[in-house]
Image (tube, rainbow, N blue to C red):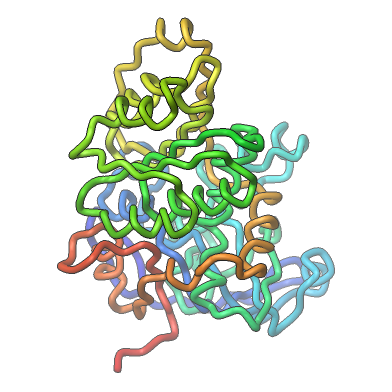
Length: 365
């Protein structure tokens, strides 16, 4: 499935490339749809230069190794028939960040180099998860996944890893900390799961009234309190819930909207940390920098997920300590990829989705 322009998908056929000793071919099982896939579909990534030209979307690939080179098999520790979860970023391996082990900051390609964001003019062309097969670049970072795990649970590896990194490791969440998660989508709920597993003292989650079901689920997953952001005063409620102290950590996973960032500055405690992970796609927040200084606030932008977070997320999935299967809402065949995007975006009738995936080999019934 190729995105040829904003809001337009077309089915294209490409040949499966020959592989050498250092690469491989993945037979796709599921490809999770990220909230950023919606922004990509709407054309916002073209506007900020993250994509250019026709692109096969999909940066949360889960699949079975179909073919693999000898050196790749030794390097990755997998063989034909193994299930793997693929990290989206393809590091160059040569830039300063890569040499320091900070692959999420890779700058060596001179552009965003990630599965799902590369134009089909790049050879080999099948570099996105909305496809029956996907080429595995030699620099790929992947993780072996158990075949015994339902695919609908295994595909949660990416959003759950985001929750681990954004809510726990990046802000250095400590036992007993109060954390506020702005947004109860799949990554917001993943933040709840990760924060609860890491020993957070109090977890507060916000979202809009239309997502009341997600807020209820957040409480099931371990949130202590929820706030309906378009019906309640978020700042006042957080102060009330924390006895006036404010939050130790705030994680913003909301797309487009900037008001949550302003709220975070208002209710984070003195010396607290705000993690920004929700891509706004253009809108700018008018932040009072004097307030940042006065309150000694640490504000950190966080991009994608690192390998330790993926490993911890996979262990969490294997533990079965949460009803992970309920996070997955639906899987769509490749031909209905646009419908899947609209489902996750809340543009279809019915309850909002949490996790939606593309099942490239699934056929219409």
